[in-house]
Image 1 (cartoon, rainbow, N blue to C red):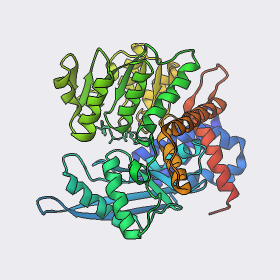
Image 2 (cartoon, rainbow, N blue to C red):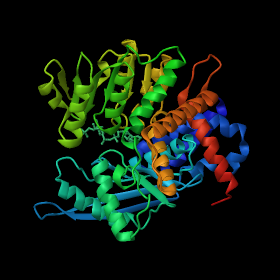
Image 3 (cartoon, rainbow, N blue to C red):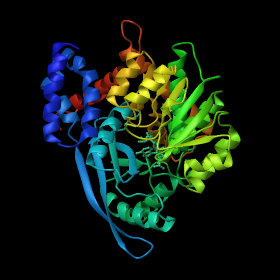
Image 4 (cartoon, rainbow, N blue to C red):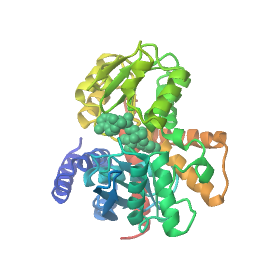
Length: 451
Ligand code: NDP
């Protein structure tokens, strides 16, 4: 690193940490972007004078609110709701809603910050936001989830709208929750609009939106592998997570000819040496999305598989790893195991699943490695396509949506190549994604003056 990059990064980060104490995930996300864009700032000093990084790291608006609701036993429960509207330079705020007990301001800000750059990469006009609550849907009845969603939306509806801020799903928020949230929004605002994405197909949703993030991850991985003359065919794939992103990443990888041998949740992982097939996938979809069960139940159905409690799947020998659960789930030990076992490609489905130390190990070993903001952007991109379909009051076929998705993932890959290819030919996808999206957002902010 140049002395400018070192000095600028150190002084910027110490200011950011002092202003946002304790927000470790937010610090981590900013530090990663800064590491990539500092040389760009040095090359364009007017961006430094305009304090563009200082502006990008200060959310345009943060909303925190009380979410009171009553559980099935009649007891009153209080949760905390958030919406971080980070940046609207290139379009209305857009980003998911997460329901998970770990949700706090730091996690919301890191996700909203990442979302701003991810949305810029999609080529669609969407600003960045994120929202959520520390509500834990696990073990709650449908009626409890509905009452919570209605209370959450009763406050959130004041701050969102189809031209203002368009939320979607994320961890703990799938089709069921989007339905309850949309129903309450419609009731309170008396409008049927495209204010939420991930809606049911019968009431404004886009075909392929549920599949889009996971499928997009695999389309992006295909492009990465192609830079080395490789593909999914015959490869062994390790997937973490068993939620929306993991399910469809696993399905697509399998359909592209790979052997997918693991899936996981926060309690452990399953290892199936024979790999998933269509029948096993159908079982997983039903287990997770209908019965809302745990991944360990897979081994009761398929006894040749084994369940490893309390562990992550990174020690399983594989060619391709797709981390699709949550932030910081792949640490330095996991990265070392992947490298030692001959893995050639790590494509992130989750947001920031790889720790900074693990990224260093993976990139140091010259593995193909892409950050979530590039490789999981297919979800928000297809949400953008859902917004377009809502605006023109039309529905596209699955083939039409899929071809847009493939093109967008390919454009994102091309942007990463443009800004991330080093002199030795190694593609630094982190740098490529960060610089390409930073230049776009910074340019729009400069055009719009000091707002
Ligand atoms: P889901 O809620 O559908 O699934 C999340 C999965 O991750 C579950 O298997 C869950 O297990 C596991 N998980 C959650 N927290 C932890 C944890 N602390 N440790 C280990 N495992 C954990 O969420 P999604 O699939 O929608 O999201 C997964 C990731 O992808 C997130 O990082 C999200 O931000 C990102 N993403 C999602 C998009 C989307 O369209 N849905 C778009 C782009 C990114 P358990 O049941 O035990 O909690």
